Structures are given as C-alpha cells and as structure tokens.
Image (cartoon, rainbow, N blue to C red; front, side, top):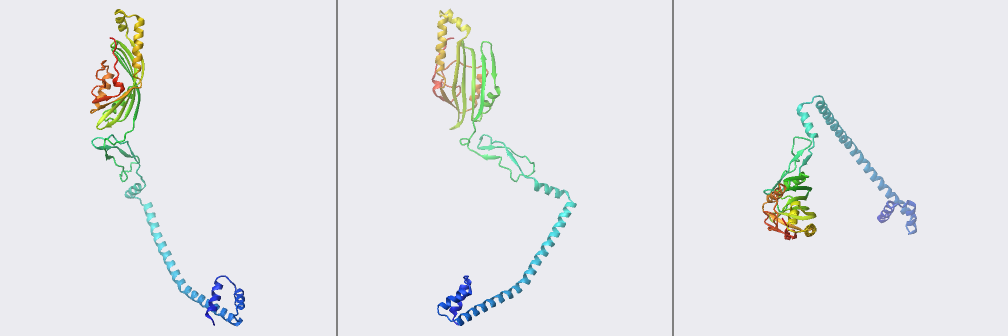
Amino acid sequence: MSEDLINYIRTHLNSGYNKQEIKQHLLNNGWANEQIDNAFEQVNNYKNSQNKKRFNWLWIILPILIIVIGTIFWLYFTNYNKESNNIKNSLTKPNSQQIKEQTQEICVEEWVCSDWSSCASGSQTRTCTDTNSCGTANNKPDEQKNCDAQETVQQLTDCDNTGILIDFSQQSIEMENEDNYNCFANLIENCQKAKLVHEIDIRGLLGVNQKYSNYYELKGLQSGKCELYVKMNSYDSFSYTDSAVQNLLNSGMSQEEINQQEQEFFDRFQQLVGRDGVCKYSNPLHIKDHLDDFREGHISGSTEDRGLPNADECSGLIFEFVVETTS
C-alpha cells in the first residue's frame, strides 16, 4: 500500500473534500479502485485508534478533575463559614477598639490650605487644615517651603480707589474709602504687588485749590529695591483761594487777569496727565511714611527734589515738571 496515497487521502479529508470527490480524482489519475478503498480503510482505522486513545485519556483525567474541584469547593465553604462566624461575632460583640478602627478606615483626610505667605528670609509658609478632622496627617501638604524673594511670583492686588480732602483753611482732613488705602499701605512693608487710585482734593495750600488723581502701583522687589510706579490719571481743577485773589487785586491785577492766570496754570498742570515715573526704595517703609504724611496733611509745596521723599532714585517725565505758583 502506497504511503503517499494514504497521506493524500488523509490530507484532503482534513481539507474538507468528501470521499467521493477524492476517489473520483484518484481514479482519473490511474489509481485502481481496490487500492483506493484499501487506503480509505487504513485512514479510517487510524482515526478510530486515535479516538480510542483520547477516550482512554479522558477516563483517566476525569476522576482527577472531580477530586480537585471537590477539594476546592470544600476549602472555599470551610473558609467562608469561618469568615461568616467572625463577621457575626464582630457585629454582635462590638468593642471600643473595633469602633475606633472602623472609624479610622472610613475617615478620609480633606486638606484645605491658605495662600503662601510672601517670601521672607528665604522661606514661605501657609496653614493647612483637615476639614474632616480625621486626627491623622498621612496626606497633609507641606506648610513651609524655600523661596527666592527675587523669583517669587506675586498676584497684583487691586485696592481700588481712595479719596482725601485736605482743607488747610479749615484745618480739616476727610478720608473716603479708607479701607482701600489701608489695603495698599499694609502691602508696602513686604513690597507685595498692589495698585491704588488716589483722588486728591487740596484746598488752601500756598493760596491754591487743586483737585487731581494719581495712580500708584507697587511693582515688587527688583534687584533688592522696592519699585513704586506713579502716574497722574487726571487733573480736574486749579483756582486761587479768596485771600490769594484779594492779594492779587491789591497788587494791581484785574479780576480778568487773575482768571486768565488761573486758566494758564490749569492748562500747564493738564500737561502732567498721563506722565509717569518710577521711584526705587531700599526701605519700602519710606513709601508708607510718605503716604501717611500726606494723609495727615504734611504736604510740601516744593518741587526741588524732583521725586518722592526718601526715595533712593526717581526717574520719569512726571518728576521733570516744575510749576511755580503765586502765594
């Protein structure tokens, strides 16, 4: 019997061809009918022997699988009964330790932290509180970190606007929105970034009444010095006091000439609007001293310094403007 014939039949049966198709093809190629039938018989005998082997192995493996599965179920239910008894005992006989442990498992820390403080002596701090009061600090955020004052990023605080009326003839001072002034003043010591619009109404200083508005902005520390930016927002009015007008009349000026002179000064001060400048301070508290002096009515009419008092240096067009008025 040709082994090639048997392999040919086995291969094509596995490929899906039926017996009749294979046999007809072999007859057409010169194979005898008896040879073909014997080869098919050999193939069938081989299949039957393989099935018997598989069947024998199944009877060997099946009892082993039954024993293994039975053992697994027995162990599972034994352990389950033990766990059930433990749970039952813990529910029926609670104690303070169990309650404490269960409470600790349930409590989840929820930390809320304040903003970082300004950089001082190379360190920043903040306060963090657990809103759930778990009594643990496993996930507590850092409350202190190192910093460089030059690199600390600060948010600009908008202190809005404040107003002051200083009447030298009545010796009175009135503040408006003083909380906004304090907002700005309190940030000066550490030179934290902030801005403020200061509306000023001065009456009777050197025989003149003036009303104008300045914009102040703390720029923060630059090269170890606190920078204050100043800009005149508006210049609203200029006039002589009644006593100054009388002195001018007594000197021979007419009312028309006085009015014209007031307009000239107003026009010249109007040129200050939009002008700005920067002053630098080694000690930021000198800025606060200047603002506090102003709030208390300690104002000088001199413009010789071309800058703000106690500043290390000032630069900008606003400090290059000089006007002399009649007293």
